[in-house]
Length: 181
Figure 1 (cartoon, rainbow, N blue to C red):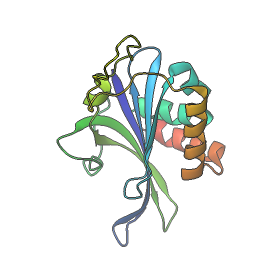
Figure 2: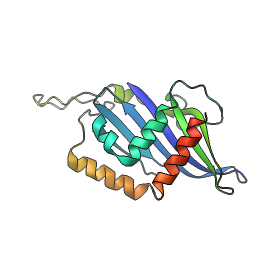
Figure 3: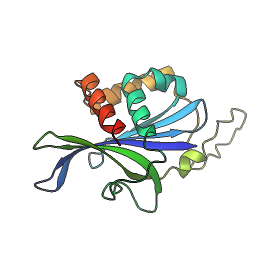
Figure 4: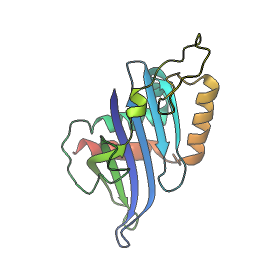
């Protein structure tokens, strides 16, 4: 299992507050399956889906964020301030942070950690269609890849919750910033 995180953080340094946060957690279970959890902490806007790796690679936005998140794996933490999302008892996952100053519009990339509980994903298992009893533990994640309908619902929810205006320009900037790390 491989986990990585991409986080966008719009920060008001004058007030020392975050005005917008976007967190994308990627959990690659094997060569064929990836769980994507997209959230906006504090906004109650978390959505997740299990898709095939091929489906992830076809998704314009998620593919770009996934590839950026992978660049965090194994790099030393450059800024201890970036490791505060999630409960400390959760798993520390390598994360790329894009931090934008809302006043100056300056953006920087930082390597940090993001805390998420991924143990329920590691227990993912295929549904046993022959099993008449539902013995699924609440902590286990259903490892069934999303159907086309479920994937379309996830994509619609993602598009509604996350503004991807000027995506090509932004992702080019993000890549350039991350490549400097």
